Length: 210
Image (cartoon, rainbow, N blue to C red; front, side, top):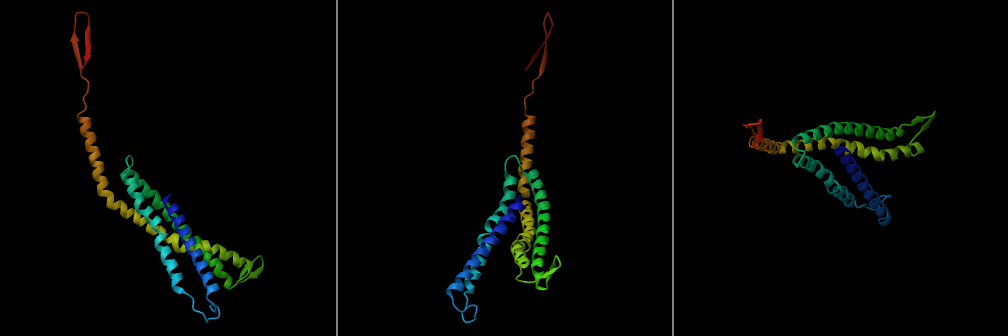
């Protein structure tokens, strides 16, 4: 589940940052005259600040998930090293498949949009930029760009980061596991077992347990 949660948070972060950028550009078009004519100077620094702020703040939660998840599974009572190994195996397999899917799907969406520059034949008719099919491809590329530029490549970072955190805590988990095994062996050794004692009487043998 972790790669899917991570991907959803990354895509949402891109969407929110893009919407904030669109609103800022619209504001500048309304308040600064002459931008389209080249006589007015846009405020580039505010657009850069939106991207920088979003890239830091909105990715804090996905980064925290990648770091904290192995710690919780490794040190939670009842789970431990075996559960952490299964967690890493599942996250690696699903993360690799998710990364390949998003890179390929995002590239397909992006290429579909760019193909209208030369013309695309649909049902025997050629369509170019600013046509209705081109508008639909632009809408699809709003998902394709975060797929191939953000969420897809970040799967590699997610897998590596969780693996590194797991390797760092592996010695501690091994010590905890060995300590639990030694305590269990000592308690089993010191366990008091009943002993059968046979006593003789005039009528029959009597077995007593002490």
